[in-house]
Length: 240
Image (cartoon, rainbow, N blue to C red; front, side, top):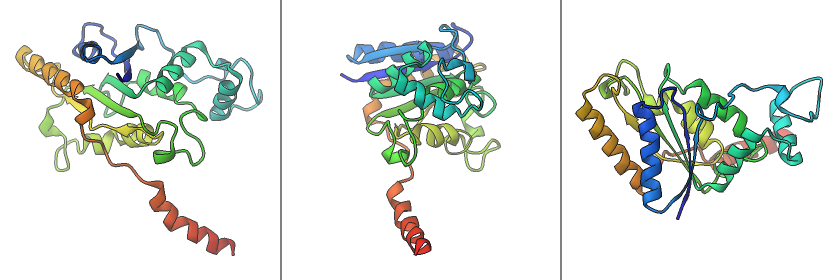
């Protein structure tokens, strides 16, 4: 039995994207997984980073958000909504993000959730990145709904690369950065404009994808060891 934390953000509870999130939960629970579920809109989650969220500041004159995160974690003074999400992240084997594509990126609510809940000290810090990050041994996967057609994305397409381009900040710069094994994403194409039969087929393919998460390929990430071999000798030569 795996533990999966699903984080979802869509302003319309009857949307296809919301159906993706709930179907993922159903499929995972059906196969025996322990699933926690955060619908960020339903929770009224505040995505805005503020110094005022820290009850006790290490430095009341100047905000260094990552350092205040560390202090709050050490002192057990995290905001309750952040504590809940961090506990779910640390307890889970898999993180699943389900959201619509907005302006070549994630919705502000997803970005703010990451800003507040990917804690310095717990998930990353210093050289604790990529294969040494806090989430090594865990998986992350995204399910994304969008209006564009599949042929509009790719190396020679009008919009360019989707996973390896416009979403690299999320897949590598966020999920891979903290140590997750990042599964190749699932994209639900042209959802607002396609016929019902196509939406039903896409949802069925999504359910098959979720049911076989263990077999899905992962995206290669940088290996710190390869860079150590380059930069450590250079650093030693400079020092000498």
